Image 1 (cartoon, rainbow, N blue to C red):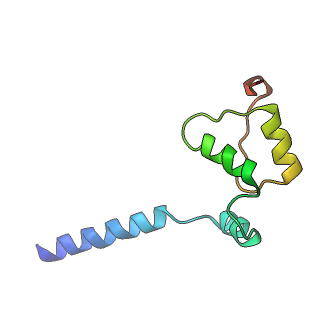
Image 2 (cartoon, rainbow, N blue to C red; image 1 turned 90 degrees about the vertical axis):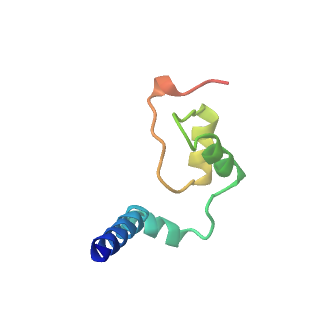
Image 3 (tube, rainbow, N blue to C red; image 1 turned 45 degrees about the vertical axis):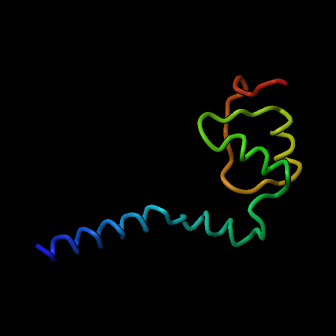
Length: 84
């Protein structure tokens, strides 16, 4: 009985650790940038869009291109870009 519980704990821990790992591409992005965000605007955009559907304005797109934001790009159709 003790052995079954021990194996379950080990397997559960292994699954949690494996699920939280970054891919090779994500690690490369982290290694090539010394900060988490490229700018204050990058931080503001990420915090605004961290859960649920992303809200993107044309200004967000322009800032991302001009400041070379890194990380996984948020892609939206032209019709989804909000004008403010």
